[in-house]
Length: 142
Image (cartoon, rainbow, N blue to C red):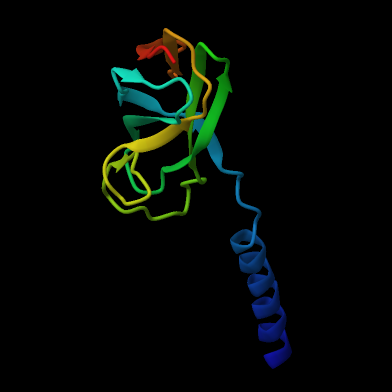
């Protein structure tokens, strides 16, 4: 009789183990909606330029900043901001809105544009819906 219980217990343990250890779905990468971007009104052509981007990454703290994708010429920067979220099926997430933050945890995420820049310099931020947010920076003559 003990062997019968042992067999049943073994089968149940195996079934529970298989369901609990099933592989997780890979995290989802997505484009972050940028609400606004701060740019300087003018810059020197051979100095790095800081942009500060503001936006909501997601509805809870499981949504995180992943990184930037950028293409730059001397007269234009095309920038896309990416977020990442794990499979939320069995995950508990802190109930707070996840926003872009800097390294010092202040609001806004910094992006540095490397020189050289030519006048006018156009910053194009790509949005999730395919639209863009554009800012122009004046580059001073050397």
